[in-house]
Image (tube, rainbow over all chains, first blue to last red):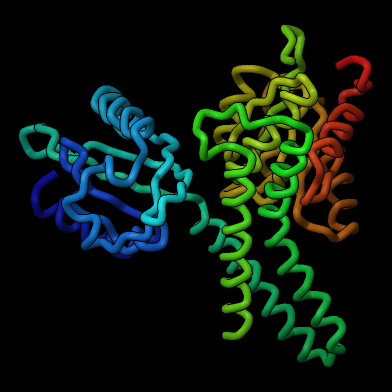
Length: 214
Length: 132
């Protein structure tokens, strides 16, 4: 990639709907777009110049180094990382990474696009809410009673809340069964999953109520 | 808990928490082997390597939705008659009935309890708890 192309790619990353990070070959962060604040609690400026070790735990860092080596051999790769939020909590994210090479083919960095899936889920939820609003408008134009309107809205909002709720209930039930998470990371324990989904549910309610007042 | 003759369930769900939890419930409580996919493409790749005994799908998947994913899976050799079950957040009984008719499969609403899911899976696969 030429310098001009790299600059253009980073400009495009500023408006990407997902978190995009650019790292040098030693895995030092040179750029992060605005989504880092939502996902990791740091502003773009705060992240600039930091080591990857500052936002992942040691196990994930070892994994990231293997991942980088694998990118060398196989090109773009997609892996699951546990990222550490500024407040100390963890976020499981899918990371899609690709090596950046200069005109001579020398590796000069990595582009990593990171998503916890929330953007896509939120976009789908927003789309369904828009559809619900359109339906509501049609119903109101047709002179439907407030009861119909209430039923439609409740149906759509309820649908968005059921998936995180399913995770919370399943995690707690499995804990009650005496099953601990035999998962790779401590963050993946059932309590961790329940907490993560409780936060998701809370964020979703915030988004939905925000949307409702627009 | 896993046995060499354990039956294989292909679970298609884009929510990673739910993926982990469904796997834990079915593998550790039920002795099944669960293979997880996040979307239609991953599901097709997994199904081509090993024909599952049951397909478990979320209805609201990114890109191709659950119904479309099931249709694609049905086209894979050996998957035409494999039973399928939807896990859906759509509460409307009419919508659930339409799903049953459309894909000739069972439907379980979200949120669900792990034991409830296991019981449903056992029923679909014709297995009693004494066989576990």
